Each structure stands twice: as structure tokens, then as C-alpha cells.
Length: 208
Image 1 (cartoon, rainbow, N blue to C red):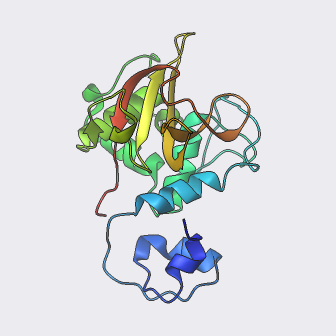
Image 2: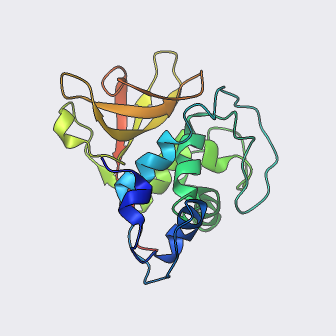
């Protein structure tokens, strides 16, 4: 796969991609909004490897919108949140807005009576509900070919916890796509797609 900078050089940048282009030193000519390419999402997730080196699920009060915990730490959902932000998509804001208008559609697992924009988007069951409500759900499968780069997968871990990751372009020798995730030791890319029970499969690239 060609580097991100090579593929973007000389191309007009849509508005959601301006932060990425400016960070790479590319000229930016805003054009119409379009869907975020899956390969950009994957590269934004891969860029977290070696930066996010620990797992820390403590409750933290965050700025809104655009809030984040320190980049050297986080949980599995933070991999997604940070990757989508590089595409101009703020899951903190989008999940909070959707929960504020459709509170009854979301799980009630934490004893909350109103949305909490500090933590709601960092919880896997809430993201599952959000993606489903956006029409992004796909059938879970045991076939490697069903999963494309940029797809999102959720699992039920043996200890009972939910987990989420991003499917990458890289495949194991048997053809299974590797997954970018943080399961306890920071952001990594590993062969874990079929290691746990899959509970959800999503493809979320909104038009705006």
C-alpha cells in the first residue's frame, strides 16, 4: 500500500481531511464532502502504535467536543475515536447528540439517567448501538473475506467484557485480516479476529 502522503499529494482535499493534509504538509483545496476512505481510517489507527502504550479505563472529565485522554493511554474504543477524528468525524459529539435525542434506544448498564459526554462514546455497547442506528451493521461472519479494511468488529471476551477493533489491510498467512486494537498493552496490530466470539460487524463511513 502506498504511503498516505504519496496518495494525497496533488489531490484536492475534502474538508474532513484538512487536518490530516495540513499535518503532512500538503496543499489543501477544500472540495465537496465525501465518505472517508477506509485506508485513511486504518492508517490513522496504525499511527497510534508506539504512541498509545498502555490501557487505562478510568473515568476522566473531557472537553467537548474533541475531548481525549492523554495519547499514551486509553481503552479499545479510544483507538476508533482517535482514528475517526483524523477524518473529521468526532464520535464523542455524534454519540452524545444521538443519545440525547434517543436515550431510550441505548443500553442502561451503568445506572445513568442522562447522557454523559465524558464517557458514553468510550463504551463499546454504546458504540454498537450508535453504529446500528446509523445503518452501519453487517452480519458477523467466520469468513475472512467478509471483512474489509476499516471495518469495525466487536467481541465478547472470555472474562465477560466487550471489546472493539479496526480491521487492517494486513492479513495473516491463512488469510485472516489483522486487527488494530488495545486490549491491555496499548495499541497493537494482531491476529485476533476469530480469537473471541464476534458480537458485531460494522462499516461506518458517513457522507458528512
